[in-house]
Amino acid sequence: MAKQRHLNNAPILEAIIDFRTKLPSTFKVTQFALLKDLLADSYPVIEENRGFEGELKITMGKGVQQSITDKGLQGFFFKSQDRKNVAQFRQDGFTFSRLKPYTNWQAVLEDAKRLWALYLKIASPELYTRIAVRYINQLVIPLPIESFRDYLTAPPAVPENLPQSVRSFLTRVTICDEKVNIMANIIQALENVGKADNVAIFLDIDVFKLKESGFKENEIWPTFEQLHDLKNQIFFDSIQEKTARLFE
Image (cartoon, rainbow, N blue to C red; front, top):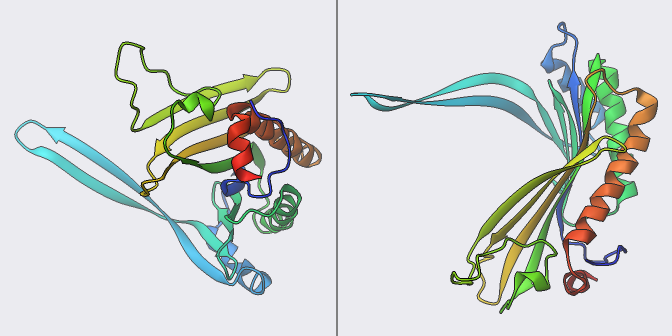
């Protein structure tokens, strides 16, 4: 595993802070449009977030039947002019994303706090039952690779009697820190970047906490710090020192 430290060229494609909420039955999702003027300077690009549900039916004699249902307007995307900061104001929650290039945790957190305050003001949620920190990393690794163990601490294992040339893989585990009741989904996936001299390994870390009774406002931000700390531990414990040095 790698030593935890600041990486000047961190391989972060997207950093996400997410809330899942329950809004009053009287709330109308169109009310989020009231934020247009408030966010005009910093988030001038606005797009509708619409939901769709697909269904496939296989019936004897009729083959495959496909239907798509429009679930209607779910919320709005508010994007910065360069589209690197994205805020989602939705019927079921709020999400703030920072796309590559990454800034830093405190900058992401402060933006999320400011926008979350607007969500509270407009929507007055009854409960927020899930909060999460998710970081999607793209580890571009130079070829040739003798063993993925040179770069990952827990790569997928191929039975030793089988050919060992791996072209792709996808692994997903969910872990739980029972002391603080925090969970994390960890996904590793290998994808060819399209260049002959490297490949990309995606390391997707989603750290979250659930509370059916709802979080109190004064416990949200300290909990986000815990989520971020565990995210950092997972990242550096998942990669080797050789990998970390690629992004210093």
